[in-house]
Amino acid sequence: MNKDFLNSIVLRDNMYYFHVNSTNNNDIVLFDCGFEQFTNSLKVINQSYPYYIMHYVLDGKGYVKINNYIHEIQENNVFIIPPNIPVQYFQDINNPWSYIWINFGGLNAKSYVEELDYSQNSITKIIHSEKIVEFFKTFILSDNSDNAFNFKSLSIFYEILYLLKKESNHSLHNTINTTYSNNYLLKALNLVETKYDQNLTISDICQSLHLNESYFSKIFHEKMGSTFTEYLSMHRIQKATELLEKTNLTINQISQMVGFSNQFYFSNVFKKYRLVSPKKYRELNKANK
Image 1 (spheres, rainbow, N blue to C red):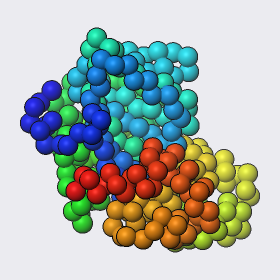
Image 2: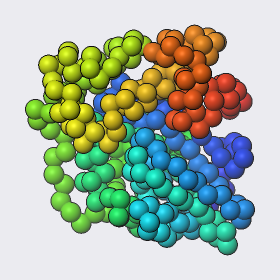
Image 3: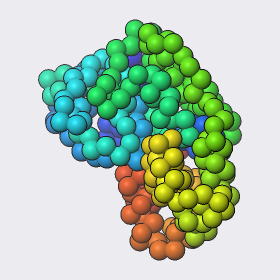
């Protein structure tokens, strides 16, 4: 691995991580990115995530178990973990991997992943392009405190998607469409953006859009890869993360401002998406500055 890259980041417990705020873009929403350098001491990640996770393996080797099948993942592989699927992955203790990851979702996330020929049974690709690793490194080394980082992070991520598509043998078809269902989804996502701080339910959305709840739930899950409730929680945690980073508001104040009436429940949901408590996240964010 490039030593200049390692010298450019501060590792804590062999990990570097930061939050990406891209909630104003519905097409692709970026949540977090990070880098982890594994050791010879076995670490098994056993989770189900509410979003897609794209990994680029910089070096070493590891294994991913999904749907009772174990995939061997090596250097220069890009693998994507789909949302809401139990998954287990771990390093080869004789040749432990290091990887960069990006968590993402959004209106077209599922169709983009399918366009790249990834699926639950085909989660990895061998990448021959030297450019792609540079984009992953550029992403993680970018200044996330920059006011324009939202635009920069999205542009880099689209470049990564473009290069992954070039590696594919299949022709590109238009994944951004204005179908009947997409129009309703966009309206629903805009309602989430403006009313996430309120007691918003799927019934409220369906009444506002004059849609059947079962139909809306079906098209939402098909397009977004998550339930409406999961997406709303994810969006609220995005907003809460930004407030933790940029204000001195108390945890309780922040939980109320993003639509949670119970601070304990908010902390549990926050830990589900950020892997640490709100208090711990704020401490880590201050330590990284």
